[in-house]
Image (cartoon, rainbow, N blue to C red; front, side):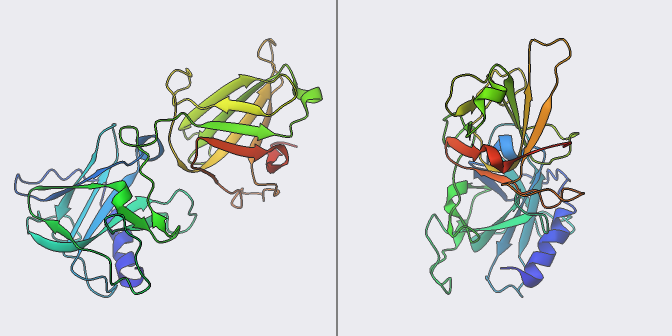
Length: 286
């Protein structure tokens, strides 16, 4: 589903920061289940298609910047300059464009509406969606992720897994680090100027694994239950020291980062507990 259509998708996303309220008759796609903790501030796009042939242009486009905590409402336009409102009805294929947090290239993940079914090899069982009223409501888990070959996990703040996520660090040297505080940050970018999407903090003690519950604010008040692909930063320090000596680490899956850090991998947070072995962390500044 790439080629010509994918080029158009990239072109479209350049315009999607426009809010585009449009008219009361303009059709809109309402997507529930998008994880706002992972995607707030990013752009989501929609393509409305009469055919899955990548050489055939979409009949409508849409896009909007994700914010807040509710469903994502995407107004539809009839041209890729997003100038004219689209208000047609009928049965169409729908492709959802989400930021790809695991991609350093295109940065866009294409998800196709399948009503939760797995497409067969030629895609002949992919259903069309009937657009009739002004609002068409679709849950995220009704879209299919071709990269993972599975329906998209519905794990939003409002409609998904509500269990708090935790990072578990195994095989740490307790003789060296007991008594210190382990503080973790879940990041969409390794850039220190980018705000984390989640935080966690715990005092290291005992002899077992370190379990760090994740919170969605730096005051460690609200539980975080997001998911996605993230950079993971860890700091170890003495919280009681007047001038704490901080050791900083980043998850690299055991590889040594190159000079610009472009080979640092993201970590996939999916289930309630994510386990990281101590030797998968790299000490910064060493």
